[in-house]
Length: 308
Length: 253
Image 1 (cartoon, rainbow over the protein chains, first blue to last red):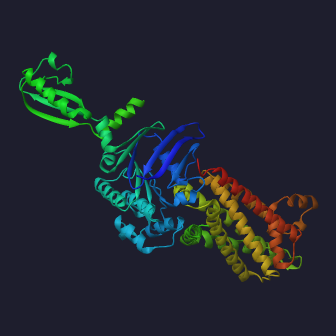
Image 2 (cartoon, helix red, strand yellow; image 1 turned 90 degrees about the vertical axis):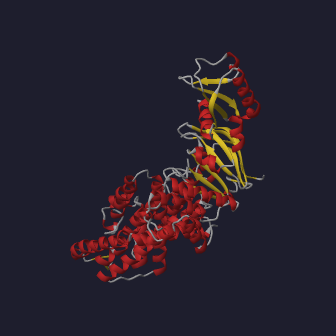
Image 3 (tube, each protein chain N blue to C red; image 1 turned 180 degrees about the vertical axis):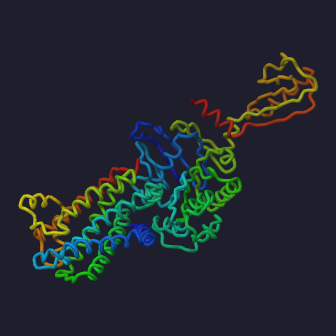
């Protein structure tokens, strides 16, 4: 798939000496939903801010649909919509005026029909004449999305879009992102909610201490780094794991009634079958079994811990 | 040129002025009227005239300049500082808007508001004293040039300030004293020779002198020098603004 964002050797050192990004290389395909995960201070917002023109890179190059963000900044920026992490709004302005203002900033003539459709899609139409200061936190978050969509961007950056919003609104936003993808918009989101990335993203990048630790297709990530576990509820408790089963990675519960086998996602078939055969051969009887797999969150935590 | 963006910033700032009409227009008009009462009526009755012009009429250009300088600076500084303070500056910085377009929008709106205010003050002054404008085109030129120049300085202050206190420091501690000492209420010819020389180091003298000349043909310094100094202030402001955007000072990290 064609790249719409091409980042190479991007680094950022702030005046304080803090290195926020270390030679990051990343490409984003046109029309994909990319989730950038990372703990606080990992460099997610710095990366987004550089692409959007708010922060200056120390070294490296960013191309947005082939436009260098420094040399062809006007063309590059006109393609991008940004929803910032903080609820930064002008308290005294009306919803309609502030969304129209953003459209104007991007050099587009007023288009009341488009603004209306954006406000309706975000359930803000009833509030179009309200001052921003009278809106709830969730509405302000939606307003920021409306502003980012006012100029019909082809790339949308969502920096922690669902931080502090309720579950309903979070699901509404997921639907919106899904709809935008249907319209061909490329979405890059940063989030602390791994569930969000798991739900929406096509690809996932993990950034930690300014370094892009990995970038994978979400399914591949789960497959490559995920672990599975099979737990047997034993008919009779065991005192210790039998010698014949020691080749597997096992854990026996303290009461001896649950035996859990951990295995690699990549070796699901043969591993589990062989294990169950050995269990039967060892004369161990069980009356129930359960399988589970590690979530994206488990993988994320282990990747970030490895880097500490 | 992103005309739509300039227009959006300009209209946004003008809408803010309409929301705060008491602060933007009514308050300076009341202050000016009070100056007329105090300086025009109370003190003016003890001064016959200055250069053949009644004292009340003589102080009108100085009063307009007093408000024009203060309001240009405060309008423009607040206009750019407020989005920095609230964080909404991100959308201007991430939009396809050039530094020149940003300045045109913010400083243009501030200058417009100041010119409107200047015209209102002139109209208010007309209620108290007879007004005569000898060189109307030059009067408009000085009014607009000064409003634009000091709106640029206001823009610079709004970028430099990292708190509301700093927004007030320059207008209160520098501009107001310079305006009062710059011949708003007197001709510097009325000063002792030594003080007159010192007064010539005050840049506001040239602005007020030129503006007053456009009304009555009276000037403390040659009008060409006034015009040249105004252009110089404008050039310095433009250079500083250009440096701000080149370096990203206080805007981009």
